[in-house]
Length: 393
Ligand SMILES: Cc1cc2nc3c(=O)[nH]c(=O)nc-3n(C[C@H](O)[C@H](O)[C@H](O)COP(=O)(O)O)c2cc1C
Ligand SMILES: O=C(O)C(=O)c1ccccc1
Image (cartoon, rainbow, N blue to C red; front, top):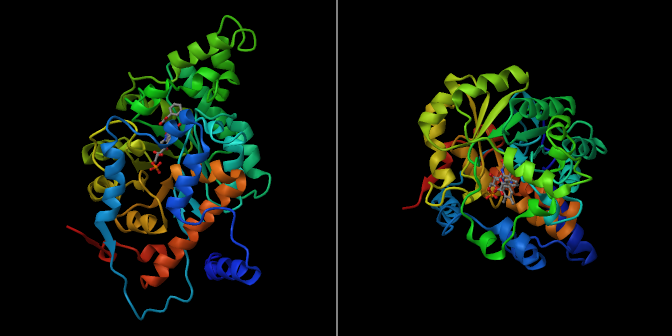
């Protein structure tokens, strides 16, 4: 199959050059970040861009990519290319997904609905967060309005109370989500000085709790309805949103709740990866939550090869944290990721341009990945391996 993105770059160059029109969307990745950052009010800006503690790990994520360099190969036929890859049993147009991000309406009123539409327009799956500003059903509907075939995954914050966990997972399955991504690294929110400084917590304005307010199990635990007493509902959410008592043994319960593939997000240690494989999970996401949880933690890309070497043959290993451009996707694939999730850049696109902004970010990442592939002498993503990289001292 030839990639739908082949020659995509000429379309973009020509369209602008022929009519002398510059795009309204910032095309450089740094420019996009700068513009989004400038537009946001201090609270949401700090929440989106910030990390834990000294932000050492957030920087380590970016630095790990800078240490890996591509060594392009020449004189190989790269005319017909494909980015397509099957991930967890689903054919994707590229090994790319939108990372789960909660509370998206803090950067744009359309929040997750705009991301669902922008992602569907490119065929790239969105992973919808449990802490979304809109219900998982509304996000699913927004994503199918234009392109029926785009898959979507659901990210679970495992709550206190098994019946609430079951309810969320069953709702996701009923709404057509194709996998359950369980986040393991956020049983407590990390120490985030930017948010502490701004005294900013989105949930206090009821942002990010739509899935709870719409859940029959959650509602049954309230004395008054959320409509009558919104602050009591927020308080209840804070109490049940995460369940730090969960252990490996509880995964069996989740397996009983759903027949969907189960993916564990937030794995960094090879021994945890082995444990996950032994427990029969379908996939892992190597991630440090974008440097928002454990300051001082290993840069996520530095953790990837160890996890791939430990379990890559048994479990699909995905990656996120620090991906900022097409070349970064290439590097993570070269180190063994089956697919890569992108977080903040998609939010910057949402901030500056809503649905169109999201679409432009995803299309640009795909075009850049395709060009990196071709100009490195490779015709499809399965040809990318460690031999394409060298480590800078
Ligand atoms: C504002 C924000 C909200 C997030 N919310 C969630 C969430 O609800 N669930 C989750 O699993 N991860 C969440 N994450 C983490 C992302 O899924 C992802 O791991 C991280 O953003 C990847 O790093 P990147 O931003 O450098 O691409 C959030 C990240 C950000 C920046
Ligand atoms: O801020 C985050 O990183 C995050 O994961 C989260 C947790 C709860 C609600 C919204 C986002």
